[in-house]
Length: 321
Image (tube, rainbow, N blue to C red):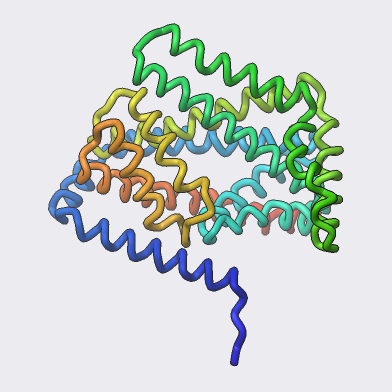
């Protein structure tokens, strides 16, 4: 009997679950409404959202460029970023995250521990950026006061700067290292040694680099939410930008958690309905706009993936770094 690894079964189950979710949501909406939404789609706003999307990728690559201490050319980092983001979206359970250290090692001869350290720090920064923007938008949405509008991001920003960069990121790894003596297996020991290496690498950034990393992380997450908001307007869902950002932040939970199948099919739509339903978007509008956003997002990342893959071939897998 053929033995199938558990992780493959989990991935297959998530893919099937996502397809069932997407199909169920598709059947729950009147097809005529979907056709009407597509026929009135504002292509100018779609083009604008793609330009903003390019800016997001530029900032992501720039952040990795700084995390790598500018040892690798920005062009090479940008190519890897485009391919990595595509694989991370396409593959289930977020296993595409591993493509970044793999590509960096295979194509650019970067040590796995170094590229993985950069990836972990970038995800922590993304988390803080999303929380900051969400608190900013949510406080304005709930309280409608300029004091809350200013207080929330400043509080989170000061916390982020102090906790992450001024403390040189050591605190992040304390929960893991405290229990180091509890787990004595060889695998656990290798993991803790790896964490120690990542922790030591995270100390090497200057204050100027840390500030840039925080600013770029906030900017790229703001622009990512802006892409979603512009596409909402393109499909005819006219809500204030604050509500758009609150809904976008809430809907991102389904993308962040490792519960998605191929291309986030089904799970993204459910998160979208939850997030924008919270700010008052009707069920039909949320479903239709979710499917349209998802389709356009796949087109965007596919365009950048194909362009980056072509550049990789032209550059012969970065022989000249």
